[in-house]
Length: 339
Image (cartoon, rainbow, N blue to C red; front, side):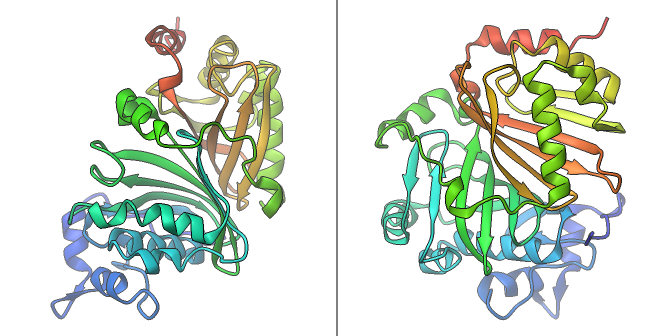
């Protein structure tokens, strides 16, 4: 298991970026300009990203996966369409935006679609990773598309990615339509062909680490049966539960378990109609895509960080909050209030 050294608290992000500069020429810039030759931007303390004041959290990713993702999004951020496309397999590719229902199932159709966006991107437009979980076989990537790339607002997404021989064979992007703006989301969706039924998981198979798959299926089973106490047993003592659309942050197995029990009828990834679609990641970082047949929200993703004992230290759920009304989100928050 590879882990990056943690960033010291006293070092600011800007100081970190300045520290990466060697002889007036930044390592980050070298990585952006020559991804085939230069190493990923590295301050000695952690991966940084060219042109963005951010340190990438790759504590639950292998170094190989972190560098691969950093270079992939650096090409996208450089508005280099051909360089960006070089990271995708030409023989096997599924790329889906799970929120608006845009799907591409071969290399040429994906490039044709992206070529309609890239030329009009603002000069300072970026797509940068903030957290990477997994390895160079499969990973979950938290990334941000800045405003102007696909609409007037930023998109904070999770990409579920499968790799083969360092090429992307499947990527499914999940994000919250409320954060992007409900009207903006509807405008993007109007330009697509409509709902998709095949998300291509069968084309890549299940390659996630056995330890990750075991935890995922135990958790999914507990959530399906509304067994908050059983789910709580899977969490480490200081675990954190996050639901991004609901803006929830809950700490500790007892509180997490109580919430999952009380909120089973509200959470789209809990209850009898839920199922695991696809699992990705290593023994310490990854997660799963889920489906929900009895919910207004039919799909989403759960990211998991595990400790050396296989306990969950952090769970982050992401789904499209634009599909539920304000009252549902208020009820999710109210249920989190402890008595």
